[in-house]
Amino acid sequence: MPAPVTISLDAMGGDHGPSVVVPGIRSYTRTHDGEGVRFLLHGDEVKIAPELARCGVAADVCEIRHTDKVVAMDEKPAQAMRRGKGSSLWNAIEAVKTGQAGGVVSAGNTGALMAISKLILRMSAVGLERPAIVASWPTFKGHTAVLDVGANIGSDAEQLIEFAIMGEAFQSAVRGIARPTIGLLNVGSEDMKGNEKVKEAHAILRDGPFDLNYHGFVEGDDIAKGTVDVVVTDGFTGNIALKTAEGTARYISALLKEALTSNLQSKLGAVIAMPALKKMRQKIDPSAINGGPLLGLNGIVVKSHGGADAKGFGNAIRIAVDLARSDYMSKVGDNLGKLDAVFDHAAKPAAAVGEPLQ
Image (cartoon, rainbow, N blue to C red):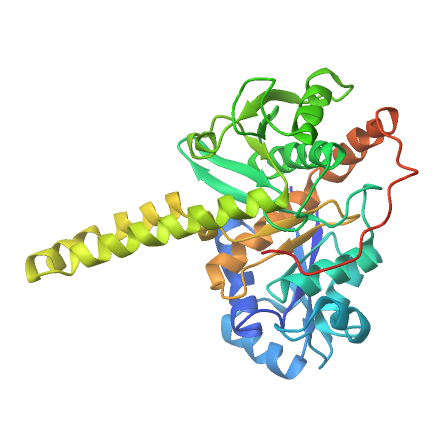
């Protein structure tokens, strides 16, 4: 029997609120077997209860925690921290802090989620400015974890090593890879290439005290090849790579749509090919895989796309459950502890909370 776990949900977050969150629970339980999983739904009971009844979600697996306060999708992080206490987002995160839930999922405001999560849960690493956002990137071999993709714009060598530690533990927990390989994104594979922070991180990952399966430097084209299981970079470079991949996927989709709707014969062919085309889009677009964990917090927080459908939200729940049931937190803690022997944390200033790139 799988270990029991409770997942806290911001039921009011995202573009659709309970009309997607509740069907997302149903999608998760049908697709991934929800045995032993319970949910705390934070939000307006008047809106949540009818959705539970409509979807036929069993009452014994869901508990509504009523609040009519909501953090708006366009609210600034600083405003959300000042005014957000008692909101569905705040209460959902606080349930993890108090031990009532093993993880939280929200489709709400990314900046607010990150800021409030950091405020309530705190960071697990002394020098980490913000939680790292990880993208599950489709490759020829499966999925590669790429981080950071937008939270920490500039990262020093220590932070890059922290990303490597967290990404390795994430791939092990969610993808079931026993010894994930790790690569450091660079402009070439030779040791002398790259800026000083990248070269410093490379040397420490190669020769340091961490029990990591470090491959070495990788280049941009190695991401889609699946050369390694985890690709590490700073949020500035990672966000550019992610948005480039997403834009390329949309461009290819648009070209295919144009070609397949140019005449009647093409349209008939498109009807037949549509299932394969949708599958192809999922293979080339990193945004098609919903559920991005915020790594580096003292707790499990998963960000769902604001416009995700029920299936997408159900996948975000699956990631939260897998992380909550794994040894992710203790594995990360063990390796982060080894950083003390390499870096002096005393001189590192705390960073202000700001808007993430993504």
